[in-house]
Image 1 (cartoon, rainbow, N blue to C red):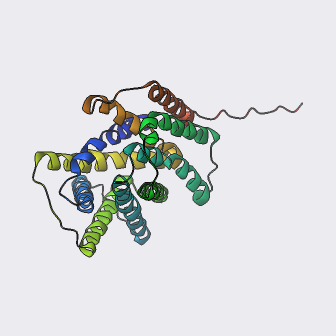
Image 2 (cartoon, rainbow, N blue to C red; image 1 turned 180 degrees about the vertical axis):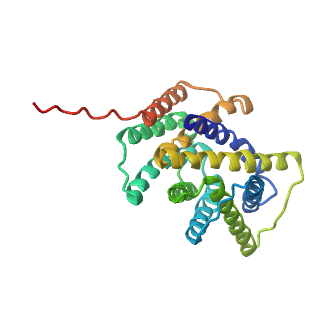
Image 3 (cartoon, helix red, strand yellow; image 1 turned 180 degrees about the horizontal axis):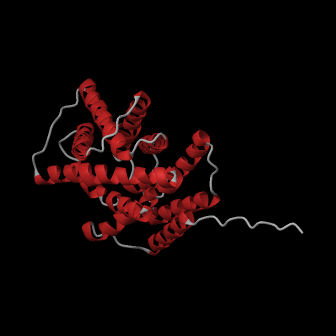
Length: 297
């Protein structure tokens, strides 16, 4: 079951980048994100009410959902969308993949969970592999004030993503299921984005085109309802540090799709990087060997 959820998350999040590019246009970024999570919350609530699966949350549960909405479905996306204005998508992918290490560190800080050596080593292999995969794009990018700002925003977005993982882990330990908590968190995130648009004077435009509406539906339902539910379920089952290795693998899926969609060409360095990512994947999911018991004569 865990492998199926893992593969589903990687495949969905590895394809959402196409829909994200289709969203860029006349509609303000903040408004598009609000539409995405508002629609996703509506779909989730409708499903939960029709199936009788909506859990009742206490005050603590609602507070955690509010914080998760702020971190995972609001600030996270604002940071990454704006970072893409100043730095290459490849660099953003590398920075976002540091979620594996952030989650390991935050699990140790907040939950006192021991950091597994194979998770750290596997995460290191994955990051190194992504470096080789995106090296041509990274090497050709000159440092500037704008690029530093973009890197800072991408790092902040990754930290927000990791914070959302920790909050989801707390919710699941309290017995709240991801379907219910995601519904409330996405609703809170959408409302905060709407409030931000009002405060900033951002117009609520919309494009009634097949391109925009189709990409919005894909991002809201497979990308958010299914993708985030599958991923956060993995956070509860496998732990945040192992689940976050999805962030290393989905750029690899995106590159393979780019071969057909944008004419991306594999290089020797990129293939070597892919091999490192695969090795990292094996290390992250390898169960540590139990320590042999020493018999006392």
